[in-house]
Length: 544
Image (cartoon, rainbow, N blue to C red; front, side, top):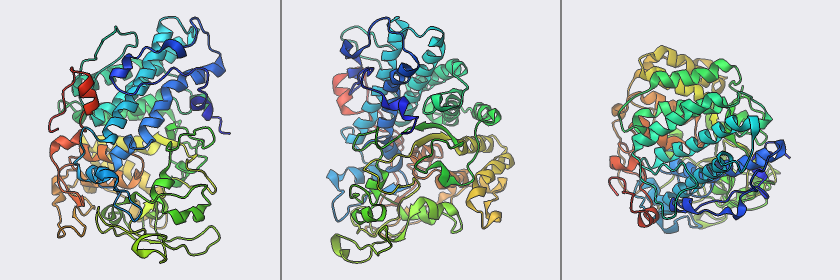
């Protein structure tokens, strides 16, 4: 048993309830609230906080969650039609082509689950501040932690939806419907909460704070907010120096470092990685939701069950867009270590064959080709392999998911330096991150300030499928395109690509695979229609 599971796994006696929509935040379900005057001991505290942390895992990684919203809409990944289906009413095609609607499941799920987290934070804060839970000298730090955690949920919402309700109270009057705040107001709220509360957090880096917000995780979230300030505040300001300062807090602490190999951050037992700053803890025994963390099921073909002796056969849906793979340097070790390619074998070394479609009975040999969003066989597309798939596992992984890691801090600082005119300093940091991935070709790890300052990308954008003639986009419109490339190469499969593309003005201005350029309004998702119908204070985002 991993000790970290104590934070997220003990839910039986202290669950504070959940909500399924913004207006459900008003559901005052007191039958699960602990007795007034309850004084939690050390063992109880983890369970108390877990009710507020668990929704992060659910909103980010469950089916049609935030990670999918970030990756399947981007130039990184795609779910094409497969011999065993994966059309599902066209939801994945709409995601890929930026034609999602306010009724689509991924829009509802990302909104609803995130507000469940906000609601949980508000409930626990209410219990503490009303005296129902007595924390004594620990109260200041725990209240600060819950407010930073709540701010992290709003970070997801301001990124995906922009203009959302700011709900900070649990004890609201009957019939209350929250007002919609502007994106700038949400941004300002998050920054205010972080600047006030992060200094009050524990600076401990130990098992007690693993998977929780300590100061350093708080500074990582602060840096992320400042890095995206121009986007999140609707273009009204940039905060490059503030981003650099937040990153320096983490760097100068000396608590974190790059692993010697990137793969060590993503192995099954990665809870001791010195690179991870804030993680979502997982253990297949104690985290039991069917889709809690199922990368292996989602990407590998059914025959690969025999490769790893999985307890269940995988479903073979998502693959990597070929242009994305082609953007990597052939000597970049991340190419071989993060993606599954080539002939597939059983655990004992026997050749695996396709089991369905036009290629049934032929060798299961993953190739960097996908005909189109509407057409693929089992061999088409390289598969996700960044996270270790342990032998004999169930439908859930036991790897912890790093939300913030030290490489991200270095790259955030590098981008902020680059955008503030200090390209050579930025290049030193990018080179530092690259060096562990070019051990056989160390000269290729070196990046110069001139390279980072140039426009254009290594990604060959344009349509690349059998539906229309091949096209090639002009990428000179992308300022600092090499930096965008570097982020793509380092952070593949980590649920963030859309955010990076939006910040570099690439998300709606370029085409790839079966995706044409889209309208700038697609930089935000729509407010779910379920919310508009139940709360007249909400207005739909432009373009929907």
